Length: 242
Image (cartoon, rainbow, N blue to C red; front, side):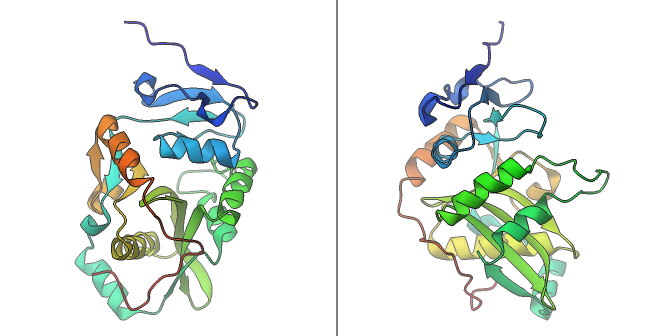
């Protein structure tokens, strides 16, 4: 059977112009639509319906809804013995929502095997998610050592769901610590799930599982409308990862 053509979205189209996620391509997995803009209304509508943007700066905006979806239940976060020991030794500080722009810039930095500028976190993406942070929807988790930012992550909070976007480490296990602290805090707040978007061995080792898209969308319909945590977020230092 021939795949349906991709939906092209114009910037002037309403946020709800996305097609049904069930129409996403299987190759490449989850590609659903092209175009539109990165306005807060469109981004929030997209996340609530299991859709996220991912594209390089020389491409039009590409919107994705992969099947299955990588999901982490906050209470299912797996911590290795070495990571528990690293946390117990201390020597670092954890904050939420104190350096959002710096975390995004660090996530946009080159990874192993990448050249400078080879990132999907473009200036347009930084501006769009920075605006969501200003509006109280986007959040960052920061790991500090000796006053320097050594790891962190950022994403979108909606209802009792956190949609993870990207993480980084400048010291061993710093991004894992950021995710562990986030999972512990979200668990304490009664959040239902962390969206990890796509599978990776790294995320699987931390407790993420694959969920069929239909089940994931049902979870979003249930939990995105529930009361969430108001912004800015704060980490409860008396509630460390266990």
